[in-house]
Each structure stands twice: as structure tokens, then as C-alpha cells.
Image 1 (cartoon, rainbow, N blue to C red):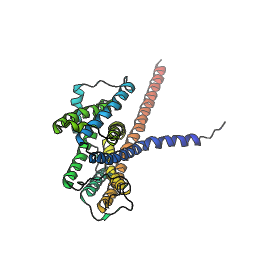
Image 2 (image 1 turned 90 degrees about the vertical axis):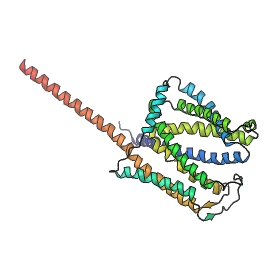
Image 3 (image 1 turned 180 degrees about the vertical axis):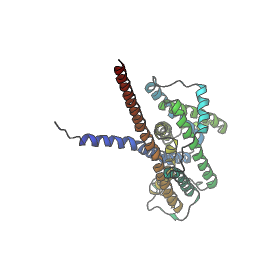
Image 4 (image 1 turned 60 degrees about the vertical axis):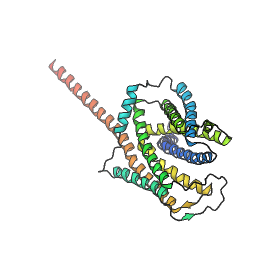
Length: 334
């Protein structure tokens, strides 16, 4: 009896595409969530919230969310975390590099895509150009009176942030190889971050009134930042880092800069400059070029597995032929 196998083939193809593009979709959603966080944080700071206190509170909320999940869901699968493992992870993370083959066009694409994305971010940050006023008014006022001050300082801090984020994701990749427990690692990241931020904030902010939560906006902003930014975002980044590597995760970060500029123009009525449009286009082009280069790594890993299995089959076949020949010789001697 003949059955139609086309529905099963379509279903299998859909599953393959789903697993293939799921990291891309998740990273785009992460950047959207982080883009809204920028506007929420700016509104909170304009209401008098101390930035250091805000960071400390959001890490505390992230810890309260992630530690129970890690305890119940990874209780049996969680490996033991030792001091020696911490030191080894730190050393390995400093030595971790992305594989680049300059003889391969896809290897060159990795370098070109990275440089283009960096150039796009610098263009958005450092170059303004002619401005374009929004056609609609701003429903939400988030910009303070001091938005244009410390422009150069903010630009250098943004570049430093991109550099430290890159090191952070490289450390994540090596940590996940030795400690493959994503929920537990996300919980520890939030816990250690909360402790570090609390100590730093105590030295920087001596007024007890700075720790007070005076409005619902501040409260729900802390909840959003802790659950989305420190909780779910960290978990998604860890998962994508384990699946695709640190370069894949890092190269989606420039999208947040572009999204913030677009959202500020359409939703908050802010002026958009030509530098933002030009830089955003360069960032997207660089991202696609780098992802095209990274696709070669996935294809190479997939091609290695069948080749290894083919070699094993050939060896088994050769051994079978040799054993049968030896049996024939033994029979003839008898």
C-alpha cells in the first residue's frame, strides 16, 4: 500500500527551518526588549531615580526570578561549580578567539561584516548630519533638558560597552562548555551582578533616600528590567551562545542602537538625523554579511558528521572483508 510522504517531508522541512532560524528570531526579540528598556530607564532617571540604584534593583529582581527556576528545573542536571573551574573559565575566556579563514570568502566576510557593523554604530553615535523632524507629536516625554550634554563622553562609554559585552559573550561560550546549565548560570550572573552593584552603589551613593521607590513607574520599570533584561534576556543569550557562539550573539547588539533611533522618531517624536539612517543601514548590511560568513561554520560542522560516519562504515566493511577472507583461508588449510 503506497502512502503519500509529502506531508511528512514538509513537516520535517518546517522543523529544520524552525530550529535553524529560532536563534535569529530570539536575538531580534532580545534587542527589541532592550530597546524599550532604554526608554524606560531614561524616563525613570528623569523622575529622580539613581542609575546605580536602578541597576542594583534590577539585578536583585533577576536573581529572585532565576534562582528558583534554576533550583527546580536543573537540580539533577546541574554540575558542581568549583573555584578551580572559575579560574579555568577565566583563563580560557581570555584566550578564546573566533576561527577566521582568510583563504575562504566566508572567512573574509566575517571580518568585513564586523568592521561594517562597528562603523555603523560609530556613525550613529558620532555623526549627526541633517535632522528630520517627526510628523507626529511625542505621546511620552522621555528626553531631559540635559540630553545633549556629555555627548563625547557618552560616545566613548558606548564603544567601551560594546567591547566589554564582546568579552562577556566570549566568556559565556567557554563557561557553557564546562558548566552547561543555562538557568543556573543566568542566576549566578544576576546574583554576582547584584552584589557587585550593591557594593559599588554604597560607595557612590551615601543618601538612604536614593534607595526609595517613590512611584509606580519606577517600581514597574525595575520589574521589567529585572525580569526581561536580567532574566529572560540573559537566558536567551546563553542559549544562543551555546548554539551559535559568541560572535553570533554579539553581532545582534548593534540592532538595538538602530531600533532605539527608529522608536524615538516614530513613537516619541524625537528628531532623526541622517547619521542615524546611514549608520543603521551600514549596521544591517554588516550583520547580514557576518551571518553569511558564520553560516559556513554550521555547514562545515554538518558536513563533518556524515564524512565521519562514512569513514566508519568503510572501515567496518573493510574489516568484514578481511575477516571473511581469513575464514576462507582457514577452511582451505583444514
